[in-house]
Image: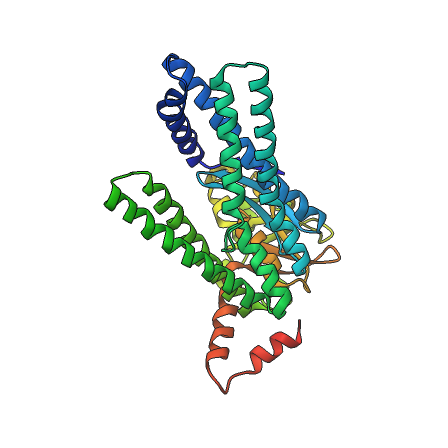
Length: 379
C-alpha cells in the first residue's frame, strides 16, 4: 500500500508547530528557550500526522477485510484520504469502513491521555506532558468532528449506510449525506467569517477553511452520486471499444508508425501483444514522441510501452462504476478489457463520458427510454 504526502502537509506541520511554539507552550510553561518550544512543537506536529495516518490506515484495513482493494493513502493539509478501488457492497460494509476511523481517533485520544497522566506521575517536565495533553485533545476533537453525520466526514458515510439500509437506494442515500455535508460546510464558512468580523479573532479562518473544504468535497460527492445513478447497471462491455487494433511488442517504433493506420482508425493508444496475442502493455502517441526520430528504427515497442502491470484492466461483465476509480488513477487513462486473459476491448474515460451523455439524454427525453431500460436489464 502506497502512502503519499501532499505538499500541503508541510503547511499543517508549520501551522501546528507555530501554534504550539508561539502560543500554547509558552503560555502554559514559560521560561524555556525558543529552540525548546519549536523543537517540541515540530515533534508534536509530526506525531499528530502519525495519528492521522493511523486513522486512514484503519479505513484501509477494514476495507480490505470487506473485499475492497486499497490503492493507497494520501495525507494532506486537513487530514487524509484512503483511495479505495471500488465501493462497499452492502450497508454493513459501508458502516464498518466508515465507523472505524472515529473509533481509532478516540482510541488515540485515550492513549495520549494515559501517556500524559503517566508522564506526570513520573515527574517528566511539564512541557512534554502538555504536548501529550494537546495530542489527546486534538484526537478527541477529530473523533467527534469526523462523527458528524455529513459527507465526506466519516459520520456522513455512516449516515449514508443507514439511509442505504433503510431505503435500499444507494444513490439517494449518497445524495442525502452529501447535501448534509454541503449544509455543514456553508454553516462553518459563514460562522468562521462572522467570527472574524465580529470578534476580530483570526481563529475563525480555520472554521471558514474547513467549511470551504467540506463544500468542495461534498459537491464532488453529489456529482459522483449522480454519475453512479446514471451508470447503475452498466457493464464494461457496453462502453468498451471491442477488438481494438493492436501492435506487436517486437515491432520497432518505425514499423509501427509506417504500418498502423492511425489516420483511418484515429487511434492514439494501442494495446501491445506478444507473439501469441497475449496483452503485455499499452502504447501511446506520447510515448512514441519520447523516442528520437533517428532511434525509432532500432527501438522495439516493448522498450517504450507502458507495461501491463501499470495499466488498468477490467472484465467485460464488471460494473463501469467499479472500473472508474482505477481508470481515473491510471497514468494512461485507458483500461484493457480482458476475458480469461484474452484481450477483447479497450475503454477510455471518453467512452464513459459519451455513455453518460446518452443515458442522461435518454432519461430527460420522455419517449426515448429504451437505453435506460436496457441498462438496468444488463445489470
